[in-house]
Image (cartoon, rainbow, N blue to C red; front, top):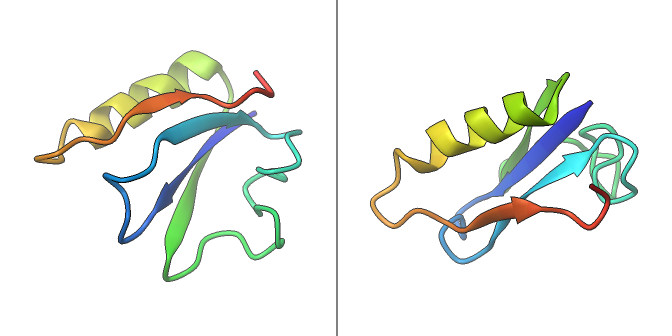
Length: 76
């Protein structure tokens, strides 16, 4: 499973990383504190394949005037 986290309101200031669900930062979409999505951001996923997460992230960032950078977490 794969996820990515979008931080608001700083979406253009931070690189959006694709994470493996087993990553301690991702925690299967619950994040470091185990809260999941909040008013400050959201976890997208789960995606069964990395390519699906990547395609969803590409589609999302294409909507921004100043699109954020995207990459993979070190867990991948």
